Length: 239
Image (cartoon, rainbow, N blue to C red; front, side):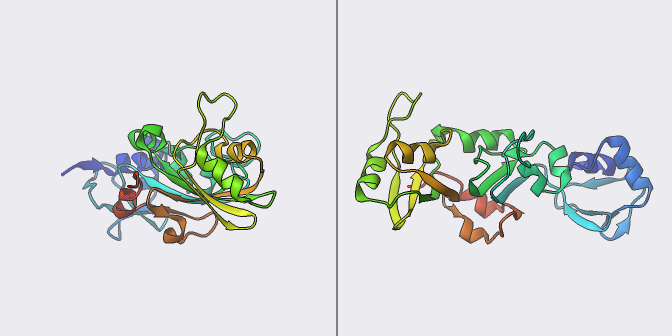
């Protein structure tokens, strides 16, 4: 069973430098199992460890796997330039432990965004070789005609792409709204595909990844949550 000194526990969880974490302990701001611990050298088993800082409880996590219901107006970047970054939606210690977005959603695109500090997970989720489908709901500028759906399913040619890109699935859910499933994750792909097919995207939201849907998560806009083992298992290619 893995054990760790409490100052190291706090550091790995993003609460600050080793020196700062020791000062935090010595000032009586940290408790384990409801008991204050002021000795930074005290060791604890990390498996299932629950501790509190400033009275707020935290579970030790070697890696974090988060989902955010991203609002419009946020950049998927650790160094945003024109809008607030999505990390500002999370407790600040996640930024200190190098949590980053898995892929990108445009600043005006809303919906399901994964975030993690696990590089292997980020790579697997981002790689086209994983064939993980993403479901988007797009609101269009012009009325949706059957020909538009046919073009998106058949494939459209985009600038700088060697081959046409096609939707795995596509269907109208309203006169000006459609559901489209992609697995490539190219830059501005939904918007560019709609333009190439003869329409324009007025609004866009990602509502599912793999077999995990935003409805299932029941997150308010701007809300976030840790993914459970069962939810992580749904972030795979579907049959």
